[in-house]
Length: 305
Image: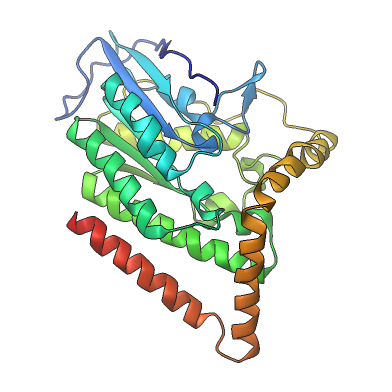
């Protein structure tokens, strides 16, 4: 893992005086910590040879006149919920953020060791500690990777089942901690290919701008964003078809090879179970019921904790 940069300051234009809110930042420096995986690292939105993404775009529109925003992006490609809990959360807490985004879980669904109960405990611990430290939480639910990649139904359904469970946990914790929640799993996001990069798993520049704009709107509704919203239109030229094909043949193949030793055997087993249930006339209902039971147990344990 490469070292993370120090917090960056984001200059903001003059705006009207902030509306007082119970947990708004004082005049001075507004601290924004970003926890998660490649979605928050900015993969898909390359500027000047490095990933930018939605977080810096949002940070530029947060602060009021007389403030600046210090952004600490701890998100790392491939991070699991356990990585966020064990490695990123302590650094975020030391930063004493006023705002903290926690968006993670897709990588968990791509592991043979996927455990919705363990993921719920990880996220509850992270959100609870940040909430107790006074940070306003930002969360998002995401589309399942099988749908975005256009996998055949026997392969896509197990991933969809897992991502629905992750999203249900995120919704429950968002309600518990009063998070600013952005819903990114509906058709408005998933069917618009113009929002997504060549890999179909990460937003492109347009998508990252849409995410930043969505969070900005929700924060402004709470009196927590006082600058101008990020522009909606990309400033970088979109990748050409040749560039997209090249990416899929190089980085995309590398992604598949890295996941194959872990995900593919398990996914094939899950697909076999799907096909067996369809063949004997029971359909996916027993598998759905098993996933629902595991989710219910995870939510019950988390809400009691």
